Image (tube, rainbow over all chains, first blue to last red):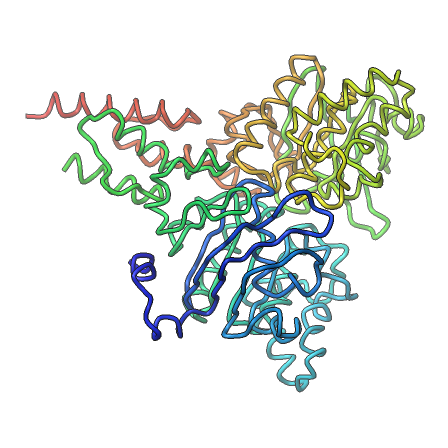
Length: 297
Length: 277
């Protein structure tokens, strides 16, 4: 259990493997009426897959912005505490350095796209870094292929559908080969099958490239079977943090988070105290059915 | 209330976004338009308030041909909430934003005040009344866009991807709002990918693919047809997938509430154990 390991961790060796450290972080937007983050503490280890959930306005987006330095470098406000990303203090590191470590994909892909072709959009940040042309082409190719959008390369991003745009936005971040991928509700404009494909690609990036993933999402059923941790936020605070099965035992609906339907059915089954009991809350239909088959022998 | 007659729409780029659409939606109906990205859902919605006019065929709203009336005339009957809620905003405060259309339609100040307050509290935005709409979070912006429509309550309400960025409690609220509008005999058309939301709301469903309507029916009929859904880049709702996987116990595929599915499963197992030696 990686979650349990993490909580027991405290030694220097453990601290060295933390790729993100957030200490007593509070933030209030300039002009905002209340703190968007309140005394947040978080440690993320390299390669972890973390799902961030909570009501709209709970602070998920703000927290993600703090992890790639957009806050406090671009958003004005009251900032206290400390955020270390790959050992660098976000207040002291220029955003362009941080963006190569922690790539961010936004809720609305329109904010991220501006070039005349998909290819140019994906290549732009790399050109900005002054990388050699061959390497740029190779990276662009890889990113387009990973997201299965090679056929869009010559299209204008503005004539694409919302879902296609989001894929281009993700490809342009991926091409930077960051260590950490921060995704702010990236599937919200995708159709379910594309969302599933996209999440499978993200899972692959985590497994194969050992990319650390922090993804905020409302619909959890596609993500939880693969997540190491589920973090629930409410009113700027982290209220639950642990392996998904543990967190699903809490009343997360009161924080606006829907459990996957299978988990909900399993909890109702347990409440009937009948001939079937789920010791572990199932996260997928397969897990659920397997348990039922076991029970009937 | 809404009538599409052999509607075709070709974008200036030459892409045919709607292809021979025939559709009738009655007053008080709730319809979900589903299908993959680029299937034509948003284009269809934009025909309801005259933002787009058919390049062939016609669209009638309450008997009015959208090609023959102004957008302003249609705006009194049809409210459209965009996918990117922000595109709608321009006022200095949340309160002003909701009040704008009402004032424009010449409502009495008292009525404006009452409606704005009601809509903001229904959408849980009252605390932001004095804030700038642009400082809201993504989900809150969406709720503000809904509050604007709710306050003015036109006869036809079209919502483009209304659940995007909404948490579960907000989605339940949205479902409640849609049921309320249905009771008021408003016609509600939503375009959505949110299969779980639709499974809960159980509206009439139109499946679109490449500009055409390929299926039109009740939620219970369409949301249990995996092949049909997959052909439109949609997935079975998880409850449908679960009940289908339990068919070896004699459980029928359904869109029932998780509590009912649990009950059914427990009862089925009880009987099974009672009869086994």
